[in-house]
Image 1 (cartoon, rainbow, N blue to C red):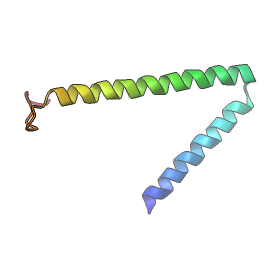
Image 2: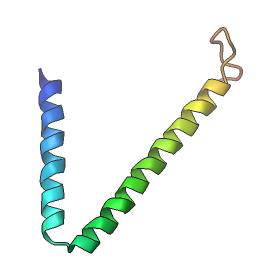
Image 3: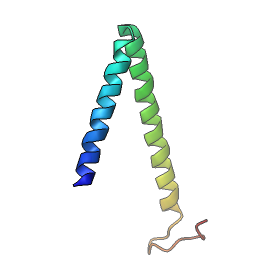
Length: 70
């Protein structure tokens, strides 16, 4: 049950933060900040995908690591 509460707490916190930030910005500033944060999120997702791809490359078809993991 705690996990579900945590998800709602995160959603509520992010929503409150967005409202607080938006209150102090012009429309132009808000549009720019939004675009920057979307770009940041996309780049973080790309980095994660590249890391996962690298991890999968180090395992042979039977699932055995090709080299020791540090």
